[in-house]
Image (cartoon, rainbow, N blue to C red):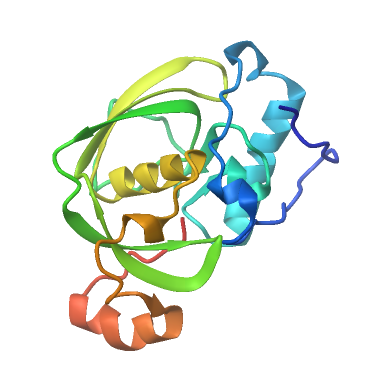
Length: 198
């Protein structure tokens, strides 16, 4: 496993789309001693830049053609606390080698999209709460609990590290919709506009 070579400074990375083999491959764990290397730090910075460029709320390394267990997520600067709730704006985070424990059955339906499956939305069942253990970008081991929408984002991004797409989690394809049809028919009906790409 070797990370790609990057230019210094900000870089918007090419996003892999459904059908590319990297999205169906289980990503490799990163040696915790390598987390603070310039190579890994640059990848994390570029992933944040790419997520912002495409107005996403999460991005996993396989989505930018890197088969390593890193994802970035969030909407605002701030510290990662012990609990992230649905009522909070999700703090920006870079998680390396995440391990999830689902709390409750994956039965809560919610809308999801994906930068690797552009312009498509679908309702996906997820656990309402997750316990997370991972390394942060400083190489520190962190643990926290997430509920609601942040829990959904974390499950979605961790799935990418295992070669799983949100379509694989759908129990019915009846809600599968193009973005313009979602906005026309589903947002008003559900009163739900949490539709950012993950």
